Figure 1 (cartoon, rainbow, N blue to C red):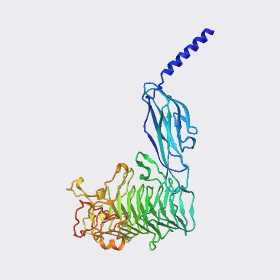
Figure 2 (cartoon, rainbow, N blue to C red; figure 1 turned 180 degrees about the horizontal axis):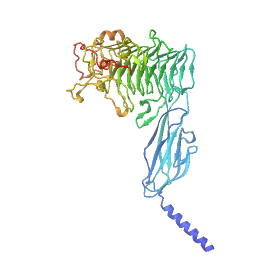
Figure 3 (spheres, helix red, strand yellow; figure 1 turned 180 degrees about the vertical axis):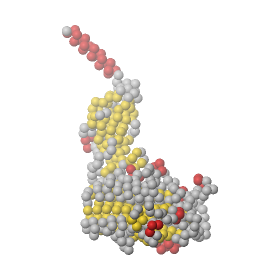
Figure 4 (cartoon, rainbow, N blue to C red; figure 1 turned 120 degrees about the horizontal axis):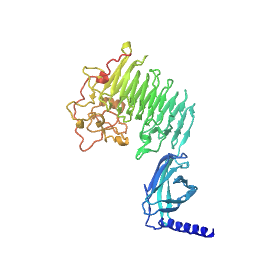
Length: 515
């Protein structure tokens, strides 16, 4: 029996020696990493990030032992790490190994503590790998945490001004009750959680400035994938609703984007001003960007772009658009709308269109026909009044004259003009859209036919400066942005814009019978 025990011990010792020989202790055998920095996206402070992965490779011909993996800041690190299924406790874990020509996966997440800082706070740590040879290798971990003021279930029942220098995070609907006024001061930022909305029964005043616009957006601060922020996608929150008893709303220098619904305006007394919106942006919505139903609304010097539904959806009321850029270049699936869709009915509901006035504006998109008008011919005496003046319209020129259309241009491609040479649709703007990264710019190209073709008298009456504050010249441009002068900018002619009649805005404006 003793001989057997001695034999087994000898075999174990030999096996142990052989196993040790399978591991390298050379400092020349290094670990390699799928990346040298794990950059966690910006997150809400106090909220865990999503998980990021890092792959560790052993390219050596022998296994590499890693006696210890540790965070440089130990237990005080804002990063949490799981290496090969083992959680680092207080920032350290022991006893790892990677077989020859094999790999190990490490998972990283961050949770940055809240602080009093207004802007995003950057944090950094190092994830250290100590091999059996004594070699220490590192991967850098970075992240940014945005401190917020969290609003949950908040109802504004008295006149209130929100003016904090750090963002407000709205977890559900922020409601302004009837009789109350909510004022958003210059530079105020709102981050709305999924399905959260701003619902106004009282009155909303967004008092942004050119230097300090008011921003309303979703609360996803991270990336969908590399170099693609969630903030460039629609549908991150539910938008703004002005309810039926809400009047006297004003919006100036607001940036409203990436919502499901942009700005919805409910039916009300059209003899009273419902909304005046100026110098603002509504961009990238799943449904309608500006949804106006039987209300008195004035929109000026504003950009309304990239809606899955209609950029501007008008059903009855009294609506004016002056020096606006309306562009529907929606690239996500499910889009069904137009740049402008207006009518004097909605299903079986009669909604007289007392006035639709579009002046010194651009209304276009990817489609050849981006303007649709519908009149309920079952009720021919219902008001259906529209007027387009000195605007670039993305719709075919009508065959018959229409005195409701004055000095407009048609943003359509000539049948004998090569597509590459056509300055139409998205070619009206510069720089070119970067669709891959969902970047859209609506500054007017110097080659656009809209350059110098707006009415000077309308510009001086309403907006002698464009949305960025640049002065409009004696030959102003259509839309909310001036074109940028370049060395190659063509000389503008002094010929007045041609007087032409209505387009499909008008051809599609031809009566649409209710079923």
